[in-house]
Image (tube, rainbow, N blue to C red; front, side):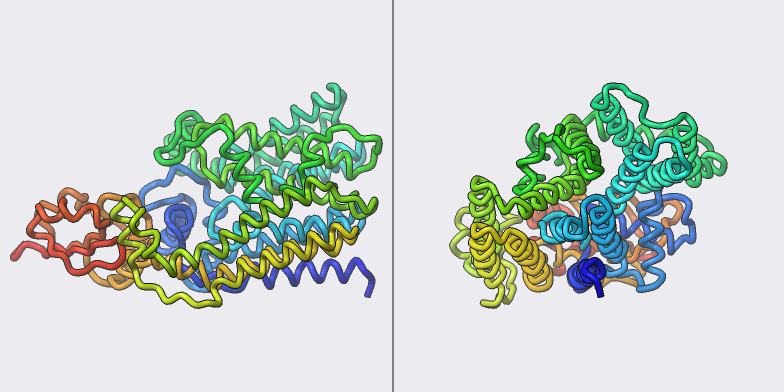
Length: 546
């Protein structure tokens, strides 16, 4: 068995080992995970796979491709957390092997292996493949479309360039079906910037441009076109208006400073973010190889994403996640060169130690704080947060292990890197990150969730299948739709005001934060039936004879 096959098998096995286990170990998180899973669930319940819905009403924010993947998964594994997250786990495995294969083609199998492992062993990139959000699938389509464009531009006028143009356009079309027109904007920016850097030289033939554009239109119209035919332009108009408003105005609760995404990427993508620093501005080089040319594309994609979503008013952590793909390549370029030259920047070692120590401390401190909550409770002024923290959760001394192991691994890795064994050192660090996240998601995160949303989610699940109304009051949530298993809306379904004060035909259950106690005290028909953590549970019975 040659070295290339061994590397490929390790990459695939690593993806399977780290991305698939414990997918269903914790409830889906509000808002995005539950929001998207609920859309897939409603497709299954209604049998309508053509339109995205929430609470059986049109949902303008996203096209349907990712929800189709979730719906397929739910039809196989059932409507549960594992099924909702499984498409991203598979996307993660595909992403790692894609990195290896492209990296091997560009710069050898060791380079491809480093590239794949840098993504596997960095915090947010790893976590996204254990989630049920749209971005990993969208990001993959954008990345692979950029790669095919690169190959198209390399092959000037032969049949291969035509195939690459077709594949790139198809990938962009799939990205549009995943997350909408923002895919077109990102690709357009990248092409224009590359054209400018290339001093306005001809990039490819008109034939290839036509095929690329036609593929985008045809694939995108598989859904957008059918919507226009079946329902007219109003749905598409509402969809586009919603996307534009996301860019122009900040969504409540999602504002942030101008450096927001830069900070998220640097901290969230540790340790590969540190290793990419030397080459983040390296647009020129003495070499003219394919790897360097592709590095230009990756730099363009990285900076385009960060600048674009810095300009966008709404600041959501997912928006900059596309930058993780090119960042991993840039980190791999530096690491490969460092391994060849047996030189690793001293300032990078210092940054690794400082940032890694911070993460180790956080991993260790989280269970420590929750296990000694009486120390921090006097400093918490928010009644809801204080009530949540008072929830009883059984912590174990084993929960401290992740932080300790990560710090020890960090020090060992840094010592090995300092002794010029750079490949071994970075592999230890990447795998240590992956193993600690694996342990944390299996052991610690489910306990943290018990302080946050678990009481409300468990209450919704207890009412599943009953002929009742269920409603959160005073906070936004999608959890009651998904975990109560709400069925399609009925005509004249009562709104919140009617459920609280008007005539109702069946019991209405309410979930509220402890800060809403005074509000419910003024509604004597609503009876408090329980409290868990920071949540209060009420019921209002129907009027006799109604």
